[in-house]
Length: 46
Image 1 (cartoon, helix red, strand yellow):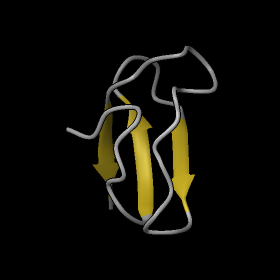
Image 2: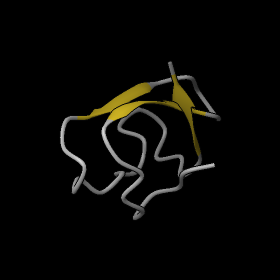
Image 3: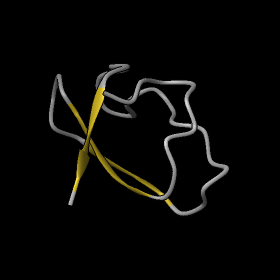
């Protein structure tokens, strides 16, 4: 499970707390806190 501060790679990530989608466009992007609820745990989508 990717968490805030990690670099999990390109893709779409869904907050496990509220379901907000976060998209990383580059493999060097760092996963931010959820912009909606400030959650830190995500699941990769797709």
